[in-house]
Length: 292
Length: 292
Image 1 (cartoon, each protein chain N blue to C red):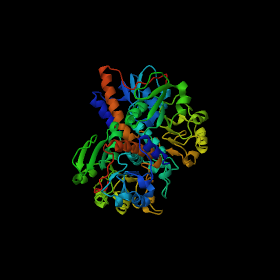
Image 2: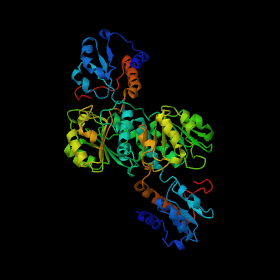
Image 3: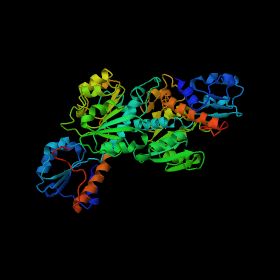
Image 4: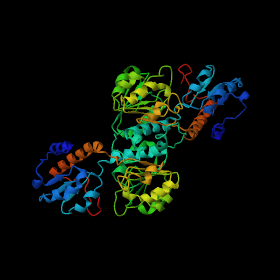
C-alpha cells in the first residue's frame, strides 16, 4: 500500500535511504505512532518529518522543535467536506428513519439548500466545504480564533460570538482541531443554545463533544439529531447509549478512508519533497506549540 | 395549506372566482386527481389549467388538447436534485450499513467527488443537479432523446448510446419522465450493463424500473446497490423483498415534500397568472401528446 509514497519520493527527485542516513522522514503509516519515537531516535541527521494525517495528536508528544514538521493538513479536506454534506443530508432527509424501515415510512424532510450552517473551525475542511456548497445557497457562518474573514463564508465570527452563531443555525458542523481549547467545547450549554430543530455534525474529533451531555440532549430533544463520524470514546463500545438513539447517526471515522487518502497524501509528499530539494517552503507546517 | 396559492393568484392580479365562471383553473391538490374531471366538467369557459406536480400521469387521461395545460415542470427540480445527491452519498458512504449498526462498523466508502455519473433525462432535475455538482469534479453524461448538448454536462448522448453511457458510470441516475418509452427501461439487460460497483438512483418514477429484475440484480450483486425515492408498486407493500435487501435504500417519495414544494409551486402560479394576464407565454407547458 505504501508503494505510492515511495513512488512520490522518487518522482520528486528524492532518494529513499535507510533511516540512519535520512535527512527527511516520510512517515507513511498512521497506525504505527507508537513505533515513531524509536525510529526517530535512530535518525541523528533528521531535519524534516512529514506526518501522514491532518490531526497529529498521536505524534504530539514527540515533536522535537529543533526539526521541521509537516502533516497532512488540507490534504484530506475534500473527502471530509463531502462527508459533512453526506451526514447533514442524512439527518435533514431522515435517512435514520427511512434506512432501517421495513414498511413505507411517513414523509419527512427538509432542505440543506437555503439552510443556515455554522462551522466551528476555519481550516482546510471548512474551505473545501464552502467551495462544494457554493451553488447551494447555504448561509454560512464560520467560527474561528482569529478575526480574518474566511473567503466564501457569509460571515466569520470569533469564538466569543459562539453562542449567537450556534443558536441561529440549522446545522452546526465541528471541523476544528482537537486542542486543550476545543476539548469538550460541545457541552450542555452549547447544546441548549442550539435550535431544537438543528443537527450537530462532527467530522473533527470525538473529544470536542461531551458525549454524556450529547446523550441527554438527544434523548430530551434539545436538538433534532447528531451525525458523528468521530466519537469519544472511539471506537464507540458496544452497548453505548448512542447506538440506541434513533436521532444519532454514526459512521466509523470514514470522512477520509485510507483508500481515499493515499493518493492525496502521496501527492502532498511529492510536492513537499520537490520543495525540500529546491529549498522552498513546505506545505502543511505543524505549529509545534499550538499542536496542529 | 392552499392559502399560499390564493395569495399567489391575488398577488399576480388574478381574481379567484367560482369554477363555473373561471377562465383559468389552478389545481392545488395533487392528491385529488380523481375529482379533477368532475370539476373541469363544471367549467365551460376554461382556457388554461395549471397542474400541481411535475409528473402528470394521474391527470394524463383528462388532458383536453383544446385548452392550455401547464404543470410544475422545473419547479421542484432543486429539492429533487438535492435528494439525488443525498441518495448517491448514502450509498457511496455506506450509510445503509452504518445507520442500522449497533457496533462500530468496518470502514468503507468511496467519493462522489471525481466520480462518473450518468443521468437519464435532461429536464429540470438534471439541470439543477449539474448546477449543484458544479464544484464537485464529477464527470457527467446525460442521456436524452434529442441530440442538443445540455449545458453543464461533460457530454450528452442520445438514447441509442445508453448501453455505453451506463456501463462507464459509478452511479446511474433516473431523472426522466415516465412515459411509454421509459416504462421498464431499467430491466435485466440494463442492470447487467452497469458496472458491478455502481449504484442506481431513482428519483423519477417507480415505473422506469422493472422491480423484479432489480431484486435479482441486488441479490446477485450485479450492481453495488440501489437508492430509490420512488418504487413500483408505490407505496412499496410490507413484506416486499426490497425491504430486506441491505444494499437497497428506500425513501418514501420525498425528493420534494409538500412542505418543500408549496412555496415553489405558489411562486410558479404567481408568475404564470401574471403572464396569462399580460398575454405572455406560460412556463411549464405540457406537451399533451408526449404526456409530459
